[in-house]
Image 1: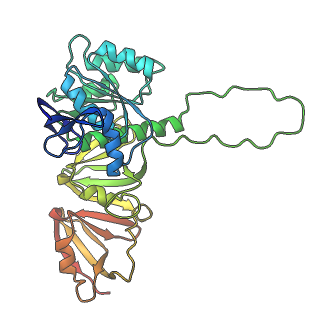
Image 2: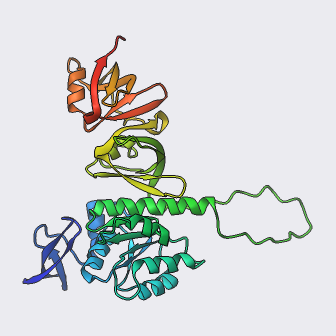
Image 3: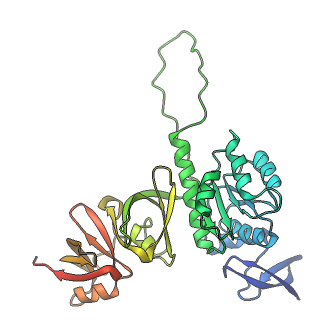
Length: 367
C-alpha cells in the first residue's frame, strides 16, 4: 500500500479528503483515507449502486471551470449520482463541446481567462440549436448584481461558491425538470406532412408520447409567505421516492430537511427563487398534493384536534392537526413540542405548513 499526498473529493464524505492507493484484483485503486470509499470515477457508479443510491437516466452535464480541482470535485459528485460528465477548462472549449455533445445542462464558472462565463452563456443562447440547454452559473464572484447579470446573459440560475453538493444537485434537478416541461409544452420539431394514398379513412391519430422527465420528480404548486411580507406563488419539484417513508416526497419533507434554502420555480421573467427557510412564515399547499404517509392502525392511533393558531403578524388560522401515537400519549402539548420546524395545520381546502418560530399562540377548540 502506498500513501498519496494528493487529496480528492470523496462522494461519501462529501468533502475533499486524503486518499491512498492499493492493488485490488490486479488494479490500482484510490480510496478515501477517512471512510475507504473509492474516489476514482470508474468506481464511483459501481459503489453508488452498491449503496442503493438512485441514478437518473443517461444525462450529460457539461462542467466548465478553469480550476481542475473544482472540475474534478463537481464531476465526482455528478458521476456518483449517475450523470455523464463532460469537462472544459475554458470558454472556447466549452462551446466546442456543447456543439459536439449537446449536453442536457451546463454548469458554468464566470471568472475564466479569455472568454468569461457571461460571454459563453450569451453565445450558447444565441445559437438556435443550443439555446434550449439550461445554464447554471456557479461562481466565486461577489458581485451583488450577479443574478441580474447571469439572467441577462441567458442563464437560468446562479449559485455562489462554495455551495453544498445537495444544493447544487437540487438546483440541477429543478433546472432539468423545468427544461423538460418547456420542451413538452413548446415542441421545437414540426412533424413532416405526408399525403396519404387513396384508401380507407385513417384511424384517429394517437397523441404524441410525452418524454420522461430527466429526473424522477413531480411539480407541486404552493404559496409561500415570508417575514418581509412577500407572497410567492410557484412550484417545487419533489422526488418520487424518499428513504424516510413510503411514497413520494412531500412539501413538509422538503421544508423540514437540513437544506437552508427552498428552491421555488416561478412564472414570468424570474424563473426561480431561492428562499431562506428561516424567513418563511407559512406555506400553503393543496390537500390533494400533500397526503401524509399511511401508517397501519395496528401500529399507532390517531387523534384529530381542532385548534386556532395566531401568527406573530396577527394572522389567525383555524383547522385541525393529526396527532399520532399510543393511547394516553396523544397530547397536543407533546405534539407541538416534538414537531420539526413546520407545523401542519389542515384547513378547509388547503394544508397550512406554519413555521413554529413565527407562531405566537395555539388555542385548542371545542370538538
